Structures are given as structure tokens and as C-alpha cells.
Image 1: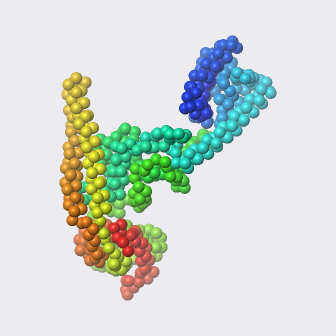
Image 2 (image 1 turned 90 degrees about the vertical axis):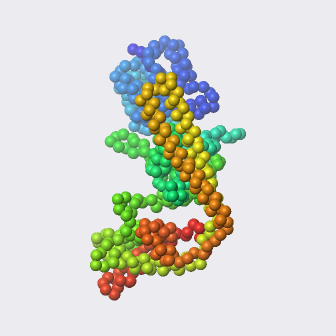
Image 3 (image 1 turned 30 degrees about the horizontal axis):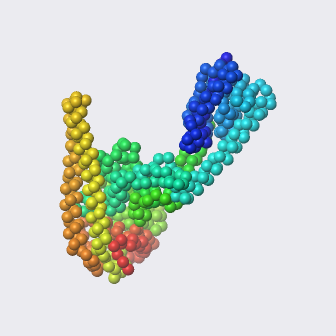
Length: 522
């Protein structure tokens, strides 16, 4: 019978290769081939395990080897050391030991030959596997401590840099950090800007958009995603919640957790809310205030209060919370009486109230709260707006340049007969549509840039005393606009009413949780 060689790369081997010590599997194969030739062992198969997996289920070559060993195919298996066979848990070690024992297959290393039929060799082999597992755990603990220490020092330990950065080696020190990629960094800034402040619309106003519309906007501009495919809402969301862009590093963000499912160990990586944050050595693409604003908006993004096919009828939609059960209060129309605000829970004993009465008391409280406040129209905000438009234009110019290059290549492919007429027409139409969109966006932004510069000229240091909230509120005719105005001022309102019936219409209590307006001062 013949022999086979089993080769497996460990983590230590990978680190040695990074230091320039040569390719491990090739070196071990040369050593074991020379050893087999010296001992007169006929080797007919070499198993090369490229994956450094902890368990047998993660090592396809080991699974194949054990299957053939159990069938009695090999006289012996040649390895550089017994720890190359298993460093997994006791179940994996037992499976390997039992497979070699019952098939009477020898394990041959340059240091020792293990004969399963020999009781002392069997014990020595099992002890070797046990010590190998112990050594693995020690190395793993030391490795994790080293990784955490590197993160605390601000070094980037990931193998792949996030979008917007490239990984660079630290000069005069071990480890890596990140350096911004200018074009990609501009895209990241635009993603945060669109999500927090908004994208400029045809009427010159900004409208905040969500992750799906941001992905659509980037795809229309032919901007490549991190994996060179189309942008997806999930990719945008991952960018918005990643503190790396604010100059931070997170540790234990997605720790490995193992579960036993149907007798198989399954490794999961759930997101952890208790992860740690450290200051990174890399420069931030966005400031911490912007990152926190995006996180706050995402935490409040609980879906639409009104279906797309209907218009809003409740100016307090999404704001009124039942203080007894925590559900959101709903408007209930009535043909004979004014509209009511009710708790939707059937068993909740929080009584209904007339909607207009809640409006009246809310606006009275807001008038008192905003009395004496000043709204400042500063150059800073206008300059930020101008800077945003300039950044948008630069991104559009880059996208336009790429599309023109693609169009030129399509023409060349058609002229050299790489494309037939149908393929060329299809490509030409797709690229032309994107170019038309970019041209329209550029004209719109240029028009708004002129308006912003004019505003900046007029509003240098101008401040306006805030008028009554109720006057501004009742001057608005659209319900949705009233709701938007209240949401700028109020986070939510707790409501409770314990009495019902005629004469008790205003026997209710509201607790207002205000948002301090961004442009206001005490």
C-alpha cells in the first residue's frame, strides 16, 4: 500500500510569510518528500490544506483524507507534526484518533512514527493532540490581546480598508493605518450630507433621502461601489453606521459566537451594541457631530406614518405617545364631532381627546418655550451650503468624465467590430441616459450655487427675532407641513387622560420632550 502527505498552513505560518520567510506549504512539501524518499516510502498523493480552519468542518482536505483513511486506502499519512492534523475541540480530536485507530493507519512524522496498534503510541498521539489544542488556545489568546492592544493604539487591524480609505503600513512601527482616497472620500461625505441635510431638488430646496434613494442616486451617477457592483441600501447603511469615517475604531463589533445546530457547530457574527470605540491614527472623513446626527436620524427612522397612496390628515402624527401603554396615538375622524386622538390598544384605559384641544395646549407651551429665542442666519450655514454644492459638482464632473470615457470605448468597440450594431445601440442608450441625467443635475446645482452666493451676500450677520410658534403654525395650510414643523421642535409627547364625558374634555396631561432647534440660542 502507498502513503500520502498532508500539509496544512497555520496562522503562525501566515505571519512568517508576511515577514518574508517563504511559502510554508512548499517548504514543508519539500522536507516531507525528501524524508519519504530517504525512508523508502512511496507517496502517491499530496493533500494541501490552504484554509487555516480550526474545525474539521472548515477543512475540506482533512474531510477527504479522513474519508479515505476510514476506507483503509493508505498505509500511513506523513505530516510535519501531529498538530497539523487537529487543533480543534475534543470532538474533532476524538474523531481523528478513532479514524486512524480503527483503520490501523500509521501517522508518520520526521520525529516519530505513531502506530495505532501500539497502546503507548496511541496514548502518546492523543496526548500530542491535547497539547496541540492547549497550545492553539494559548496562541489565540495572545493573538487577541495583541489585536486589542493595536486597536487601543489606534492601528487598523482589518485586512481590507473600508470604502473611502486605503490601508497603509505605519512608518517605523508595526501595524497599519488608513489613508483617505480623495474621490471615494467625497462620495462618503455626500452620502452623509444627503442623509442628514438633503439632496438639492428641482425647486432649489433640499430633501433628505433614505438609504435606498442614496443608492439609486450613486448608481445613476455611475459611481462604483466598494465591491465594484451596484450600490445597495445595506451598503449605504453600513457606511452611515461605521465610526471609522469619524476617525474611530470599533472593537468587538461583531464577535464570533458558536452554536450547536443538529450536531454541527455553526459560527455566527451578530452585531453587538456593547462594542468599544477607540480613537484611530487615521484622519476622519467626516466630523463626529455629523456621524452622530446620522446615527440619531437612523434611530428615529421607524417607517412611514402615512401610506404613500394617502395624504396626511393628522398634524400630530408620529408625535403623540400613550403614557399608559407606549403606543402611538391615532386620529379618529368623526362626522358629528371634531376629530379625536385615541390609543389604538383595545384594552388600554387611556381615554380619547379632541385633537384640536391637544393642538391648542401644545402650541401654548411651545410659545412659552421659544419666547425670547433668536434664530441666526449666519455666514457659516450659507458657506456650508455653498461648499456642499461645490462638492456635488466635483463628484458629477468625475462621473461625467467616466461616462464619456465609456462612451468613447463603446464607439471604438463598434468600429473594431467587437460590438455588433444591437450591442452598441444598447450601450450607447444606457450611457447617454446617464449623461443626460448628470447634465440636468449640473445645471440645477449651478443655478442653486448662484442663489446661495446671493443669499450669502445679503445675509451677512443678519438675525431675526423669532415670532410666535402658533402664528407660524396656523399660517400653514398643508397638514404635512404642520407636522414637519412640529417634528423640528418636538421629539415626542406623552399623553394621559383618566376621565371621560361631558365637562372633562380638557382634563388631560401632556409631557412635551422638545428638540432644541439647531439654529437657535437661549
